[in-house]
Amino acid sequence: MRLNFFTASLVAIAGLCTAAGAHAQGGDRINNPYKGWGEGGNDEGEFAFVVMVTSKEIVFDAGTRAGVKTGDRVRIYRTLTVRHPVTGEEISDKFPIGTVRVARASELLSIIKQTKKLDHPPKVGDLVMLSSADPKKKEPAPAKATKAVKPVAKPPTKQPRSALAAADLDKRALGVAFTASLGRPLSIRLGHYRRFLENYPTSAYATAVAREVGWLESIMRKLEKGAGGPCVAEPEDGVGGAAVLHSPITTLEVGDAAQVVVAIVSKQPAHGARLFLRKVGDEGFDEMALEPTGAYYFRGVIPEQYVSERGRFEYFIEVAFVEGESVPKVASGANPHVVNVTTPVVDKIEREDRSVARVMFEYVNFDMDDGVDDEYWAFEADYFYRISTFLYGVRVGMGIFTGTGGDLKEIEESKDNNREAAVNYGYIEGEFEIVPIFHFMLRLAAGNHRASGDDNAVMNSVYGFEGGVRIGEERKTNLVASGAVLQRIGYEARLALAINVFKRVPISLEGLVTNYPVNDSSPGLRIVLGTGYRFTDWLAILARGSWNARTIKHTGFGGGASLALSW
Image (cartoon, rainbow, N blue to C red; front, side, top):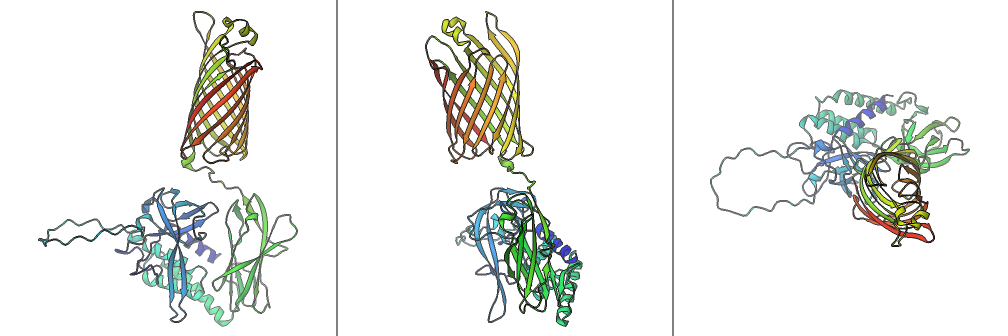
């Protein structure tokens, strides 16, 4: 379809261009929305365009090439265009809707996370003032008067940075012209593109713009003569000198804030447009009015319930004229357009929040009596990296374990029956995602074991594994059930509840059944309570205490601590 192809081309051009603001004495009024932006010396207003808005992110078309860095503060502006009721002059001005930080800056594009701090919801076409053009930046104080001296020739100073190289001015001008013409009558759209051709007759885009101007002029002539007919290939229900222009939506991602847009090209003004939707399999359609935007356009946002989960929904559009003589349709109730809603394929984890390094130690005692040694020490250090695919993450680490224990009856009979064990080991663990709230983990371990039974310590290789499942998202409240076996040391079954309701205060509750610290120790029960504090988004310190028992008379306590760094 010719119109859709040209529009897509202009959107692509606008996405490559960093828009700049116009500076006028006493304010920010923009009477010509593209002429002169970024041209010599006018660097006080460096702007970019918002080119995409989703439920989670705002994307604008300036990146590291334009000096934007992750963490920069930028201000978003809404452009308002009105026609003066007396002079007839078209006036454009911009108003700030909020200041936000850049979450990620790439070479040509930057991303801002959606926030409720903005005065109005952002939309495509809004302006983003770059940090180098911050209006709050103080002007340098005027120099004090000094005695005149003979001027000395100075080397030429570095010229102020222009928003774009001269070769890119036509790209910017076309991007601004396109944005300024959205939703406007044909005569105003023609005016923007004609002025572009006057100002940039040698532009590489001049031929395409001239072709578009000729096509828009042909539509104007048809309307003046009252000739109907389609404006694009395969229009929907061209009726009575009217044509309905609409690009059907075929695919959306969960959470998309998608717009439905329909344009009515007709001498007879359209009275209104209504959107009808239903999920595939439902009987009736939900109905909503589309808002008029300009002389020919009607727009509306697809309700959230239709894009909140994977699936399919159907829609069609009805358009009524003032007299009500005809109602052209985009599709119909009997043959509606079908939209597939898919799961986003982008990473769910920000690249700056993938790694966790952790060190921890713990002391466990099963009998506090002076004459019985049934205890162990454990130390571990590991690194976890989130990948966010089916392989959700990988953990590698090492540990040191040392303890004294044995069969409970033998220990109670004589302290000489205690056995000592020490293991140094390393491990690798993979965590796999079945669905976001159900993961399974598998760990493989290998190391060496030193046992004492005589004067000469014996070193043996040891191997072990651990498997488990997690119900709930990793960084939210979740439940983990796991089991582990390590040669020479024993087994451990664990059920752990992580409570992440409070942003800064994590809480954990664990129940364990184990025969640590030596393989033939009697089984025991451990109840562990842990809590801590997240001082920053990257630093957390946690402490834990435990009650441990092999029988009601054979009990003790333990404790430990850990430190975690995230980035």
